[in-house]
Image (cartoon, rainbow, N blue to C red; front, side, top):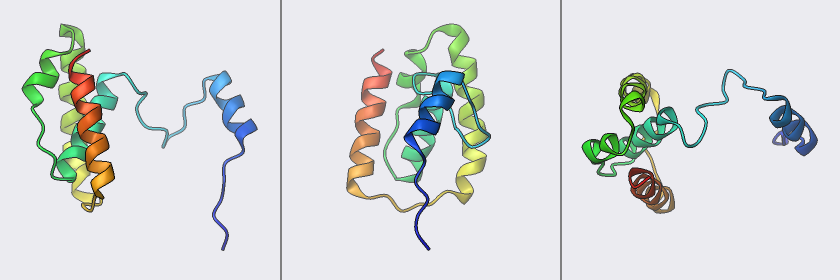
Length: 101
């Protein structure tokens, strides 16, 4: 069975219309997105300094990060545990740069 490829036109139209599907996931640059990456980093065995990441957020964003991180911790029980070296390196780069914002 061939893999389904999303139509670029459909993706562009959805982006312009502000579509958010049930499986869309968190928006990059948000505390929720960072929490999702932290959760995946844990799944991949990447060391994460949550204190440093939390310190990089404004006060109102910290609560959002902590809540999202807790919800991802529950979901991670079903997450794939296997990570390639490339994914681990990407997670490390993302979390380093995200903590410096």
